[in-house]
Amino acid sequence: MHVLVIGAAGMVGRKLVEQLAADQAVFGFEVSRLTLADAIESPVPPALQDVATVLTMDLAEPGEPEKLIAGRPDVIFHLAAIVSGEAEVDFDKGYAVNLDGSRALFEAIRHENMREPYFPRVIFASSIAVFGQPFPEKIGDEFFTTPLTSYGTQKAITELLLADYTRKGIFRRDRHPVADGLHPARQAQQGRLRLLLQHPARTARRPGSRPAGR
Image (cartoon, rainbow, N blue to C red; front, top):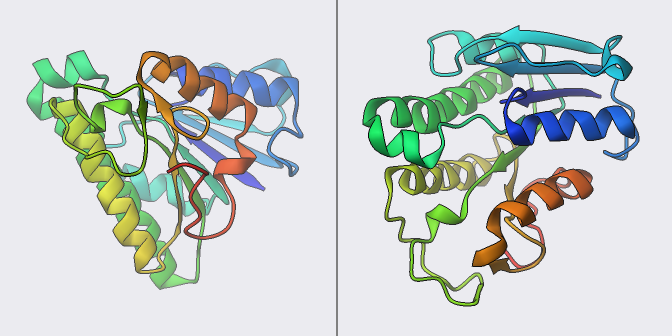
């Protein structure tokens, strides 16, 4: 399996790659090729040197998503993002990376699929910011998506794009949960990181599947 990690130099991306290096069976399949992409050079653990390729690129730049998809990765972890504070301060940059870059990635997948059938599994790390405050103790499926920041809006729009591209049968999509089952607001960051590292195979399964509680 060819695994692509976009945003591999970020906190979550590094932890994911480190976990893969510590347990190469963590995904439930053998990783024969690993592509690590980010705007800065991604570190490569020694255990993955033989299978890893590092790409320094900007997902929002024209033509860059197509280069990533040219290798036809089987599983794509889309972790790249401008975080909430920076996305709020720099409106243009936030939308360019968090929305335009994501849309360009999805379009690259669609066009590759049109050229020759291609259905990768896409794991997108969203954010509790899509919900907006005030938060109840637990956030279930019925809670409204009403983001109060540019970052949350960008993530929410990307979720809608994911759903629509999946509805059209273009690729496999899983909306990555913040925590197991429901969404305890006070444990958002810890839960998202824990689940991504402990259960990555769970987020990359049958087309259109949704983890429990989402």
